[in-house]
Image (cartoon, rainbow, N blue to C red):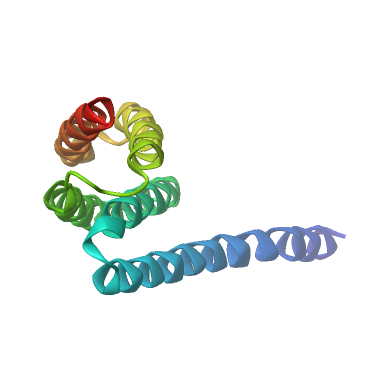
Length: 148
């Protein structure tokens, strides 16, 4: 009887673990595709693509922290800082989808605030630095939106 319960538990929870791994893999693939598109995109289109990358990377970092993969989350958050800088550099007077990019960054910064409150203490500094960078770029983006 006990072995039946153990087998039933294994059957129930194995797909959940496999799904979590598949979800992280698909997020990584989406990010890779977005990075490739951003690198090949016209400079006026890059801002929105970098905002999408930041949002996807936030989702990935959240999943990594929930799974206990703190090293992976740290790496993802550090990469996010680099993409926030690239987004900042891609801002031009005639950048396309400014408002959409700003909305994505706003939701990304809200998500990062939640991550900061839920992250283990030793990860909070990396989350805080990333949040600061994203909020800075969001502020500049918002200024660009108002100028148009």
